Image (cartoon, rainbow, N blue to C red; front, side):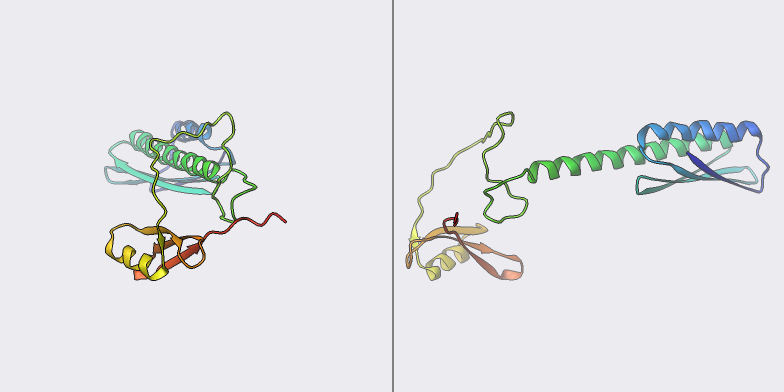
Length: 188
């Protein structure tokens, strides 16, 4: 861990410097890479202020606290930094977990990036809460558009009357619509 310590309007004791190093060392268990800590101690009358900026793992966090005692201000700053680092790590875990679930390798995904329609691995059985069988009504594009306009649903799936293909008419933002045409995958 690399430290930069700045003192304003005070000459710190060796004990305060060592106390600061020990407190900042608590952060090492949460961060994998080199940690750069910039500590600033300021005394103005009876206000003892500690400001810390920690840079590590592409993360830059800042905390400051002001009390009547420099040691308690440093304790509070380290507590704030720990909370911020833990929160950041949890966000990364959730983000990475979401990416891992959504982007399992798939050889048959119809060209949809991040969508996996392959069979789930045996250790991850597919579970659904509900199954609904709906009829696929033969409609013209105009009839499907009218049905979509009259409903609160975001899309209409229908069997195209003209050529028998499965279609999805989807409400987009700003009132526009998108027509999705499904077709058999070409394996040649």
